Image 1: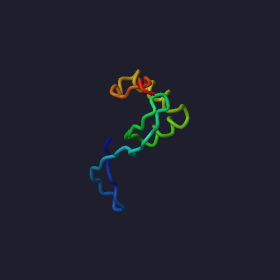
Image 2: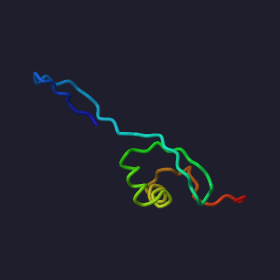
Image 3: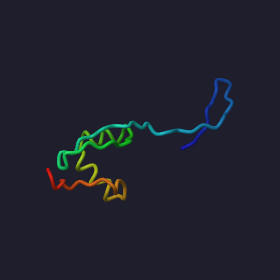
Image 4: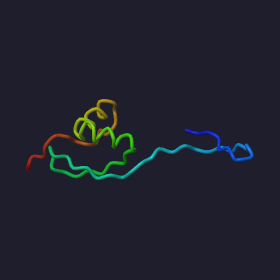
Length: 76
């Protein structure tokens, strides 16, 4: 997203609004693995509310995170 930075004298210069991203490690109990995801603060709230597995399934249905497997490993 972009917009204007407005100074005290009301001069306008272009600026960008960047998402609030974090690199966070999550444990998937179904697979016994740790994964590292770059998530926004809003996504962190959704993960804490719904749970990681439900959140990942919902995101995969939307077309994100296709490389993350939720199936248990053969050795576990």
